[in-house]
Each structure stands twice: as structure tokens, then as C-alpha cells.
Length: 440
Image (cartoon, rainbow, N blue to C red; front, top):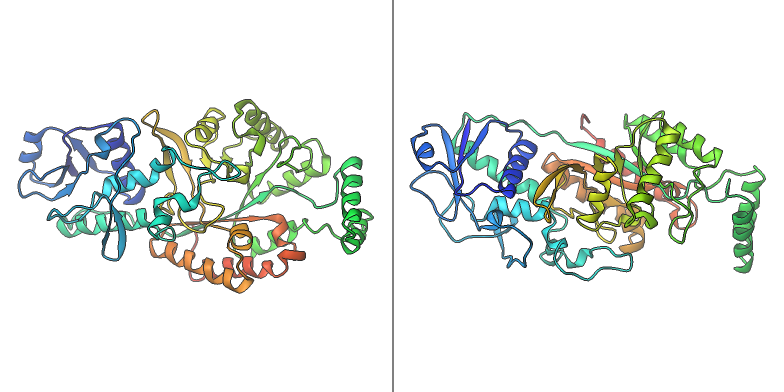
């Protein structure tokens, strides 16, 4: 048993200590107390967390963030400890020269995303405006590293404490924004597509479209057998996120009533997990989100518990509140479109904390770290450079035994046009990730 003295126990304190000890350290037997007499009399493993030490006990510095209520501008200082960037540093003579618990809470809660900020063209928080980008640690799983540093201090002081060993895991995920490039689109959309191609004098594409429509050539976005085979080869079970919203400017998948689309969804569910890909148009409309989940549920004949926002539209806390109201239990949106890395500073799934309501919620956030569109469109990397960039991220995740979540789309595996050569990126990513690793 580990006893922890804290002058004031708040919802933030409860959430942070539960997350740190149970989620990151795999340690269940701890108690929080505000009873100073009880703490002083205890002869077992213990430490204090406050603005100043009590006596000669193991002591961790508190900056006061976890005792606060409400959201206010924070003066965040940055330090460094054992090669890792830290937040809320202190010059006090302590085992860890920073407020490790506030640093973890600030990162996981996405505190900075609740503060006033400029948003991009798709109404998203910009990667470049994050403190991680500003101080150059976006590609470092700092939360996981801070937890490891804490564990080492505790283990050195109390050798009898037993922490569960973390195990690296990999979750390949694929978003289906557009199930097919040309097939099954209906007469009006097909005529419109052909006309657009003719207007561009792109006769090579026109011939491919016609061949696909006549059944003489495979639709370029129909990469599902390829995906099945490579995932089967490496014993992986992916998650597919299905866009099933109404047709719109940013939502162009097939109709949920299309029998070919419904057959595809049912087929995918035979060998993969499926989740909802809430449409661009549903992001701020709860009823629309529920309709889309209902559509997918009716096709699969099972509850829908996983989600990733189309266009990675994430506004805190509204997006997660909408998902909770729709009974979603896991979300995979936490990542940046424009940069690789760790938006929340972590590669470990964790519970969402609603800062406005000051409450832990029953929604598990699964951060993703790599998206192929980031490499291709935002970073403009070549095939070879993309492979190397992915390997660096995977190395970081393996070093802390975290969970690697990759984000791909069915069309980027087509080997068509700008995606020529990207099957190699996907294959090498999977091979490198699973090499010498017994995946759970």
C-alpha cells in the first residue's frame, strides 16, 4: 500500500492520481489522505504532494494547478530532466524537479485547447499553436516518460512496490471516407463525375472510369482484399471507421441505403472492428450524429462503441460530450492532421476529463500518432522519407511500451496517381512495427 498526503483532494487530484497509478504505472494499491496525523504515523511507503515538504518524507512538488477550479490562462514554464522536456519546473531540491502530476494533467486534459485560440480552415486546433510544437517535443511521448521517471523514483525509495509491466501494442485503423472511386455512385453522381473529367481533358482518367464502370477494371479505391491479406499476414485486427452521413461538400461516401456499401460494411465486420466516422456535418449536431450511428448499427446489427471524427474535427469538450451522449465508449480522433506525434503527449489510451464540468468521463481516448495524409499532403515527404519518419515515431512508442495507432485510408493503398508507392509505406510500417514484438 502507498499512502499519499495531499492538503486538498479535488476532482483533478482524483483523476490525475488514478490515471497515473492505474493507467500508466499499473499500480492499484494507493490511498489519498488529507489527514496529516495519519500520514505522519504511517510507517509504510508514502509521499507528500504539496507546495512544500512536511519534513524529510519523499516529496513531490505541487504547483497548485490540480487544486484549482475553472479554466484560466496558465503561465507555463518549460524545463528539462534527464533529457526529457518538463512542464511546471521547480528549483526546489526534490526528487523530480517539476510538478509531474500537473504536467500530466495539463497534457491529457488538453487544457490549452480550452483557452482562446485561432483555429484552422476546418475549425481545428492548430498543431503549431500547441506548447509541444512551440518547444519542440511534439514527437516525444512526454507523459509516458514522466510516468516512467516517477516510477523509477518510487521504486528506488520503496523497492517492495510492484508495478505492472507495460506491453507495446499496435492498432491499425482505416477511415473509409469514400468506399469506391467510381462504382455504385448512382446515375447522377456518375454522370457528373464523367463530365468533370471530360471538362479537364483528362482522358486517361476517363478511360479508367469507363473500364471500371463496365467491369473491365477494378475500382482503384477497392483495396479491401489487399488490406485483408496484409493484416492477416501479421495477425492484426484493424479498426475501420465508416463515414455514413448524408452527402455534402465534405461528406462524399455512398448512401447508407446502397446495397453494395452495406455488403462491404458487413464483410469488413467479419474480420475487423468497426466504428462510426461522424460526418463533417454532424460535428456540432448531436441528433445528426445519433442518426448516423443508428444507420451503422442497423447494418451491423450490433452496438457502435468506437468513433473517429471525419476531418479530425475535435472541439473540446463539445465533441466528446456528443459522443458520450450517443453511448460511444472509445474515440480515436486525438492527433493532428498537420504533424506526426503526440497531441496529448502520450501513446497510452486514457479517460477523458471534462475541464468545464471538472469530471472524469466514461470515454477512453485512443491517441493516434501517424496519418498518411500528414506525410503526403502536409509534410510533402517522399515514400522513403515517410518510412523513416514513421520509424522514428514507432521507436519512441516502443521505448515507453505504449500503443501505436496508425491512420490510413482505403484510397491511399490504391497505388494510383499520387499514391503510387504508398503500399510500400504501409507494408514497411507494419513490418517494422511488428518486428520482434509479440502483439497483445
